[in-house]
Structure formats: C-alpha cells, structure tokens
Image (cartoon, rainbow, N blue to C red; front, top):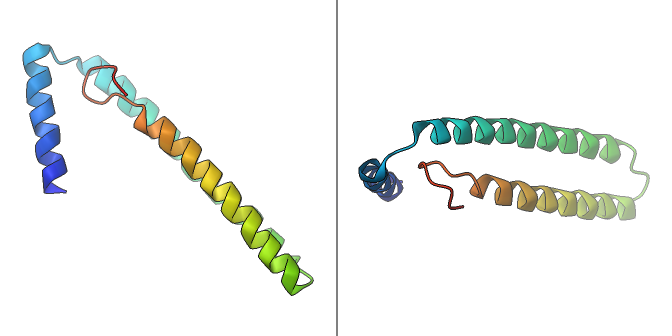
Amino acid sequence: MAALQDGLRQRMRDNNTKGFDLSLVTASLQAYQANFLEMAQVDMQLAFEFGQRLVTIRSPFEFFAVIVEFTSRRIDTFRRYSKQMAAYPFLGHATP
C-alpha cells in the first residue's frame, strides 16, 4: 500500500510539472464514484436474486445449477466493471 501511495505521489509531482488538470481529475472521480455506486447496486440486486432462487430450490441438482449460474453472472459483472473502473484517468491525463 505504501508503495502504491509513493508511486501516486510521484506521478502527481510529475503531472504538476506538466500542468496538472484538476477539473479532469474531479470529473474522473465523480464518474468513478457513480460507476462504483452502480456496481454496488448491481451486486446487491444479484445477491437478492441469488437468495430468491436458493429459496425455490427443489432438488440438490438445482442447487449446483443455481451456484454455477450466479457465479458465472458475478464473474461477468466483475469483469465488466473492473475494465470500466481501470479506464478512469485520475491524474490529469487521458491514458487508461
């Protein structure tokens, strides 16, 4: 964690010498927060649906099918949002 913070500080210093764009950082952080809230909402909805499906299971085979289905959906959701979150430029430049 300390190494990440040091790297971030160094990149901020480098950007300050190049002209740090605070408005871009602010816009990126706001979009990141909105995306993070959307991701949390999707995750909670998925957990709720998972719970509902678990309650309706009638056989042990259905249990495994539900686990596989929701694990697959969760992995797809994580993959989609992790790509989106990684694309936000936080340090005043537009490189993802």
